[in-house]
Image (cartoon, rainbow, N blue to C red; front, side, top):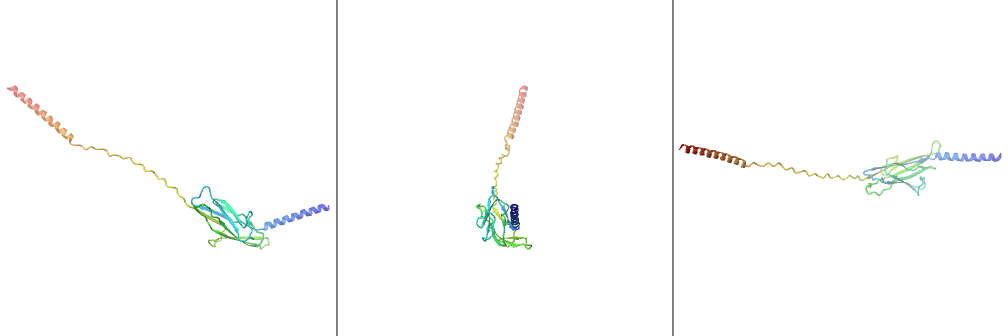
Length: 216
């Protein structure tokens, strides 16, 4: 009986510890930073890989898992909306980070070199329910608060070479030949008329001469 009671107490204690840990974990605030990469110009095919870094300013800053040192590296392909892994906070404090995009190797692309400064304020909730985390993100270019880290990469716009249309040679149309009329036809007609008149005169003279002879 005593052994059974002891076993029940141990199980109840373990359950209480697990429930307490779950409650604490549920009260731990977390921050997720959205990242947007946009492209313009003649985008290469296949799409290029881009690298975004989350850098902790202080060693005390919590970081996502799989972080090497104080830098977390995220690799993405092409344009789109992405998100850095969730950062969970266990203690109150002010934590500072920078977010940047590493320049690529494409000589035809101008990579966005904006550096974002992110400050996370972790405080106790007013209702005593645990901790609260508030993230504020500012680009280094101006003081406008952002809700996401935006990087715009611009490629050179390549225009397709114009296809030259070969000029077709127009057939040379020779003007119709109009042979000018010469005076040969008119001269020939005149000759024929003269010959006819001469023939008639000769016939007339022969006939006249014949009549004259017959009278004698």
